Length: 409
Image 1 (cartoon, rainbow, N blue to C red):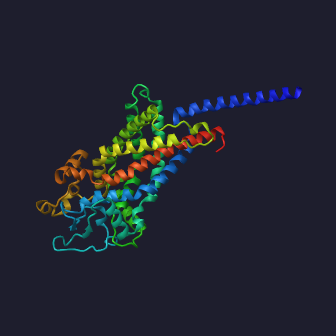
Image 2: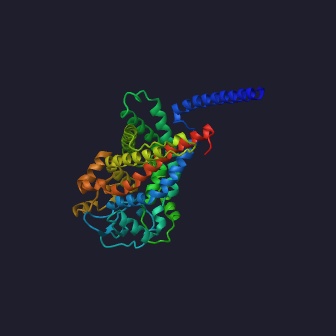
Image 3: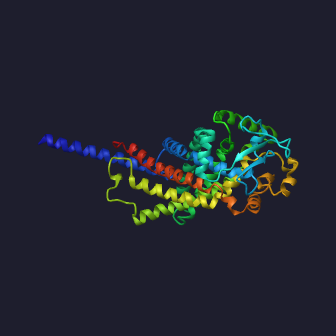
């Protein structure tokens, strides 16, 4: 009898101790969730690392093709599928030696300027095939190191900033659509500005075509850095942020539209219980919640494609601006002759045009379609990257919450 009483007292003591621990955990969890979604900064960094690695390995080839499709308009006269085009230092790599571009030669039209024979990429899949065949598979993953180096801190700043701004905003309850739009846009400004120099290096690194498979990425990177060092000496630190204005015009509306669409879609899925099941993984010991993963995966991909359709013109402008030569258009010499022949491009007359004027020049000279060049590979990149990143992020939060609770995994 006494033994059973002792056991009852021990069980009560263990239960009360467990309740106290759970109350303390829930109190701490509430404090954490108020500011950072319920997980610590190191845990958030780990989540960002996992998502960044997965998305980079999957979508980098589409990113390379997108940049090639967008910048090749700077190399060709309108309407030509294949052309010998006098580059006249339209793109930055023409300011360097011709070691990278095999087949460089001169002709009577531009005896003092290097010209390059370039095969136009007609579409995404052909572009992937041509790049892999002519330059090797590694060319499709050029800049992946910079992508990872840039994506991890960028995503930490981006997601942490969004969570903090969203949960502390006075608009959270009164404006459920406007709040994520404004918070997502603000978080993107911080993230894009913090990695702008690395984004410039990555874009230029992926833009340079080669004609030899044995040309290493290190050689191209050395050329890119040499060119940027020259710009830094001539124009100052502002040259490291070239294209940031267009990057912000692309990324800030993208993030606002993305988060507004994502939050609306996830709430719709929850309300309709379209993706819910009777068996909820949260009730068990497993940290993986299939419903949360599927819901965030679909919402992220749909929201990403929607945002991409609205912001692609800014993406075209950003790519062209960042790979264009810093040389003043007036020093091109025979640009007026090219204009009379109908071969001038908007990118040849960059100068210091305002963003909307720059995009309008592209539209005027090349048509509306030029502003949506690369939209297909961009969607192929954005849909899985947004889906994987946000679903990994949401599932990782559940994982770390389970770890913090001390449950078996």
